[in-house]
Structure formats: structure tokens, C-alpha cells
Amino acid sequence: MPKGGEKPSYLDYLNQFNLWLESNALPVNSQLMYFRLLNVFNRAGWPETVQVDNLRLRMMLDGQAETTVIRARDKLVTAGLLLYEKGKKGAPNRYALSWKPLGNASVSASISASKSASVSDSTTARHIKTLEEDQEKDSIPPKSPRGDTAPPGDFEGAGFGAGLQEALEEWLSYKRERREGYRPTGLKSLVTQIKNAAGEYGDSAVIGVIQLSMSSGYKGIVFDRLKGQSRAQGKMKDPIPDYKNTNREWSL
Image (tube, rainbow, N blue to C red; front, top):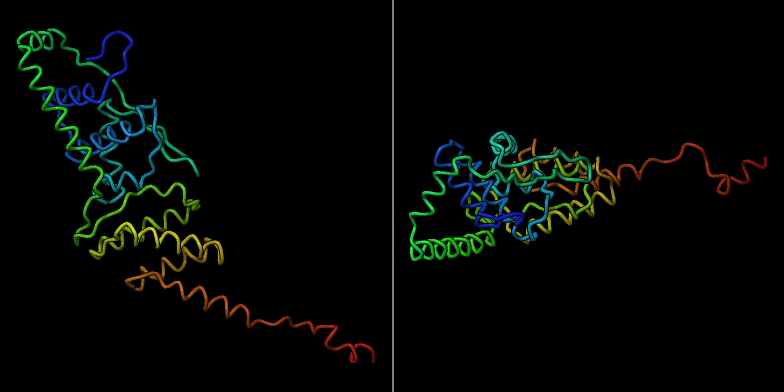
């Protein structure tokens, strides 16, 4: 456990959480989310807070539904293990770890006193090995139901608006329901397609095409419909004649 003003370490948080679980109930999804968030803080260098969007949280739980992910997060908040601040457009939700040592100090002290140095060293070595294995596993994206590798869900840099971001999340959920996961390269290409289409035709048009593709049961997004709409709009002519082309008629 940290002493004085020292900040808790990765190992401190793990020990605290595991001891807390010995006398408290917590759903498996919430436990997994806590471990995943610990890894996020560790990779970020243990800042006070981190920003994580809901899509990334869903990927932490192997792409489960957003409602399931939110329930898992709320269980951690209710238990006092996680602090949560709702984000806004362009700024994902913000999270902080709550450090609250277990209240039964006498039990902790007796447990610590009963351990010999050799046992303590052995336990520490096992924890370090476990942490290294967990970090290696976290570096490998989770599997989709079909066995494809599901990519990380961090698209904050894509520059999508809230509506387009939500449409992308719905499309990924739709693909998982069809057991058609994306590999990292494929998802990166999809994000680029959506970004380019939105730049050319607008967010609303792209959202409409994504919704049409889902409602029609298509395997992919029918971006060609955007080109068709554009051509149809291009055929509309101005009902007022061009003065330069009808100069003689206007001069009569």
C-alpha cells in the first residue's frame, strides 16, 4: 500500500480491488472493465483523469451493447471504485480512479505480519508476471464472434460529428449481430470512406445511407447511392433561361 503522499501504483490498485471483491459482489463485466481501465491509466502514465468514449468502452468488453457497457460502468461508480464525468460533443466522458483503502486495518495488518519475506517476494513476482501477461494480452485486440480481430474503438481523431459517430457505432453493432466482424485494416478503411463521403456529401446524407444499408440488410454500406443522389440533383435545371444564351430573344 502507498505510504504518506505517495500515489497508488498499478499493483496497489490490483491488490485493493481483489481484496474488496472478497467481501463485495460485482458483475463480471464490471470487473473486466475495471482491469481494462487500469491498463488505460497505466499506458497514459497515471494521469488524474482519462477520456474514454463509449465505443472504446464497448470494445473493452468485446463489443457488447452500449446499454450493457453503461450498466457495468455504473456498477463501478456506485461501488465507489470509479469517478465519472459526462462528456459533451467533441469531448468524451472523463474517468478517474477512486482510491479508498479497506477500512479493516487490523485485518490487513495481521495478514501482512503473518507473511514471511520469501512469501512476499514470491507473491510480488507472481503479480509482476501476471501484469506482464495481462499487458501482452491487452495489446492483442479482442476477437469478434466470427473470429475476426476487432479493432480498438478510439475514433476521437476522425473528426466525426455526434450524429455520424452514433451512426458508425450502430453500423458496427449491426455487423456484430450478423457475425461479420472487421479486422483493424478493414475498419480503418471504413472510417476513411465515411470521412471522405461526409466531406463530399455531408453528414446527413452519409447517416441516411448507413441507416438504409442496415434496414435493407445489406452486407456493406451502399456509398454508391450517394453518387446516384448527386447525379439526380445535377439533372435539375434552372427554370430561368440563361441571358447569355438567349440574348437575341431578350433584345427583341
